[in-house]
Image (cartoon, rainbow, N blue to C red; front, side, top):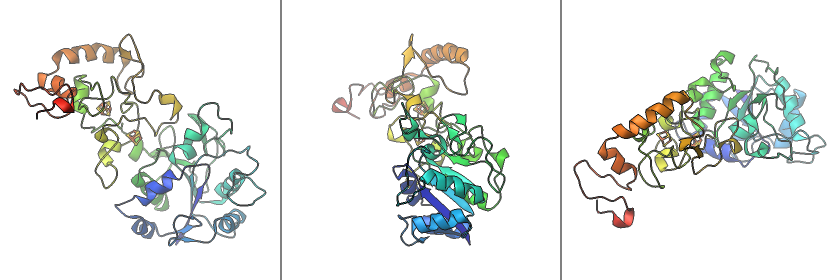
Length: 335
Ligand code: SF4
Ligand code: SF4
């Protein structure tokens, strides 16, 4: 059996909550497939072994071998004591020590990967990620860190990370099927972060014709007016789907906030409206050159079919040829 040590640093617990939502496989099956024993995690009452403080000390001293070190939450090295127990050593120092002896280290969530919510704004706590601070290499362990397996910290960002991203990454490391070549420029596994959240969004047809929603709950694309960052955000959220494989942010009518990106959250504000200059969004899609976007978006609007133009600002489908309009919202919705 492999030892999986999961440490909660400065976090909200969202990554653990997401892991508990794993459905395919569910968590006990995932741990069996991993061949892993979970050490010292207070939430997993029937799964873990040992009390966190004792386990961490034994792991740092080498008394217990750590095959997989998973860290949830940012670290702040300057804090006098970031730990949950009475220890003279800050939690960041324990993490640094265990990362040196663990076979591999994984940062779960955007805070552990890049600092995330904990490192945004003025960052008075000087919070940081394990091997990145925002979009710059460094963080707690430094740019040159490599685990005993020879890989850098593998980042699995997301606010929270999808349970498949977590389990799939741990499994690939355990099976020796993930190395540095499989990671992108922010050390994220390409298999999960090689696409855009925009890909497979059901609003793609609206996006192509720049048929945009003007208010939430309307059917059009959320990019032009309502702050969607799906075209900027590297994740497979609209292909993999969440919560029993049923939804995603944009499927639920909510804009993508680009939560897997190193500069999330404050690099992607405002969240719910689109910043524009001269009517053109200031943040354009990652995979389209700006000149093309500006030229093509005007033409797309001109070519937009009537069906999409009407449906984009409608709360329910208005079928082609149906002259009944529900553009004024649900109270006027006769379909
Ligand atoms: S709502 Fe967002 S993710 Fe969906 S098509 Fe529009 S820009 Fe893309
Ligand atoms: S759609 Fe965007 S904001 Fe929502 S979980 Fe995916 S990456 Fe994060």
